[in-house]
Amino acid sequence: MAEETARGAAQEAATDEGDVTEEVAELADLAARDARRERLAKELLDSETRYASVLEAFETVDQLVAAAICAEGFGEGQDLDEDLDLYEGPADAALARHQPLVSPRMRCLFATMRQLAVLSRATALALQKSMREYGPDRVGAILVRFADATYLYEEYAGAHTSLQQEIARLGSHPEFVQIWRRAARLVANKGLALPAIFPAQDGATAAATSGFTSSFSFSSSSSSTFTTSSQLPTTLSSFLILPIQRIPRYEMLLEEMRREANAVESLEALSAHLGTGRKSYDWWAKEQLMQLRLYTHGD
Image (cartoon, rainbow, N blue to C red):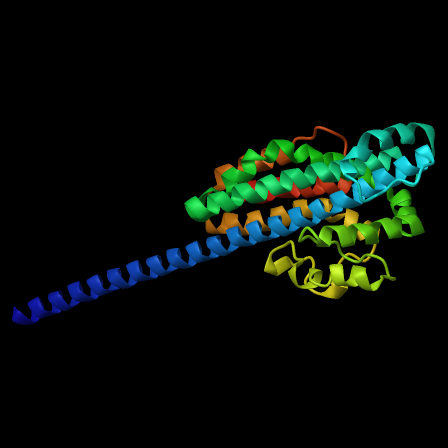
C-alpha cells in the first residue's frame, strides 16, 4: 500500500514537473516571438526612415531641375540659390514653350516621387509614435492607415516603365549631372544625403555622400537591398527604381511579422488596399501586389 502511494506520488510529481517544463517552454517561445516581432517592427521603422530621407533628398534635385527649366525658358541667368519653390510655376510655363532638359512626363514622375516622400515620412513618424507607445503590436494598423495612398506607387510604376529611354538619356546628360552634384551639396547642409550615382564626382560631392554607404539599407537582414558600396545605386535608373522596390520589401517584412503574430486581420486589410488597382501600372508591380495578397492570406 505504501509502495503504491509512493509510486502515485512520484507519478504526480513527474506530471507536475512536466507541466511546469511545458509552461516554461511556452513562456520562452512567447518571449522569443515578442523579441522577433520587436526586431521586425524596428527594422520596418528604420528602413522606412532611411527610405523617406533619400526621397526627401531627391526633392532638391527636382527643385533644381525646375530652376534650370525656368532659366532656359526665360533666357535669364537665374540664381539657383534663391528660394527653389519659386521656380515651380515658371518651370511649368517654360515646359509649355520649349523642349527642356526634362520632359513634362518626367517631371510628373519626379512630382510623384515627392508625394511618395511625404507619404513615407508620415508613415515613419506614425510608426515611431506607435512603437514608442504600444510596441510592435499596432504596426499593421499603421500601415493600413496609409494604404489608401498606395495608388501613388501604382502611378509611379506605370510612368517609370514608359520612361526607360528618357531615364537612360537623362542619367548621362552633363547638365543633369551638374544638377545632381549641386543637389548633393545642398542636401548635405540639411543633414540628408544623395548617393553619388555618376562615375565622375568632385571632392565636394564625395564628401557630401561619404556617410551614405554605412546607413543605406531598406530591407530585412534576410533580404538586404543595399549593404555595401558596390550595391548602392550607381545610375539614375537604379535610383529611380527604389520606390518600385519598396513594395516587395514591405511584403517580405510583413510575411515575417505574420509568422510571429496573430495580426493577420490588419495585414489582410492592407493587402486588400494594395491589391486595388486605381491606375494602370506595369506587370511587375502588379505581380508584386498579387504576391503580397498571397502572403497575407496564405496559410
